Image (cartoon, rainbow, N blue to C red; front, side, top):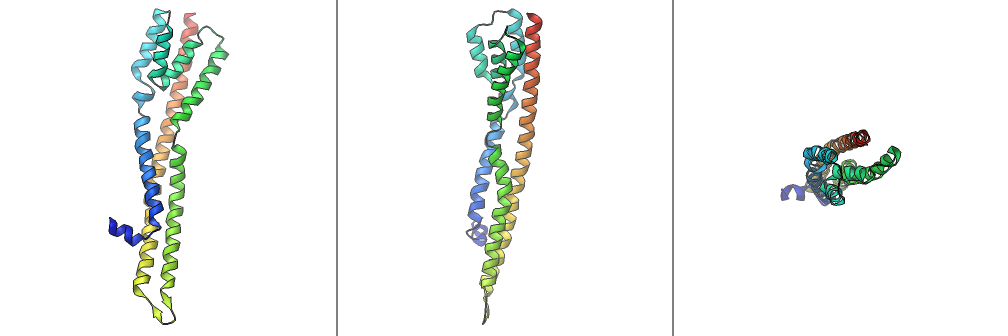
Length: 200
């Protein structure tokens, strides 16, 4: 591995740093965007049971709020129980914006990495080409410098692609996952509002 880094020259270091950041984000999002953490399936039944028994206590709502992101939205609905539907929906939208922001955390950075990595690879390619052409002199050319220039150009081109492709795939995957979570939580919140209205 170190031999490849040496052959790629100093322009590979920005790509290595970028790949480390991208990998860290992929791991962090894989952990944070677990369905059991965002939308626990048992929570849905538990909340409907709470509504069925009536007289929901403040400590139950606070516990619900700390449970998960869906729990936060459910807690907002229950806090505003008895108010007009427009007010409840407005409160849910505000909570939803906060939840959405946390779901989308670091995805912008991941998208930027997928865009910037090929450009960093291209930069390394240009550096390699400059070194390649510097091998030509009036007295001939230096084969070692020529070979090093080609090595820098090719490794950096490949490095940019190797970093960009997984970053783009991960970005698209997590973007789709976040959209799915947001849409599902909206539907579940509306279902809870309708349930409360039916019980009132």
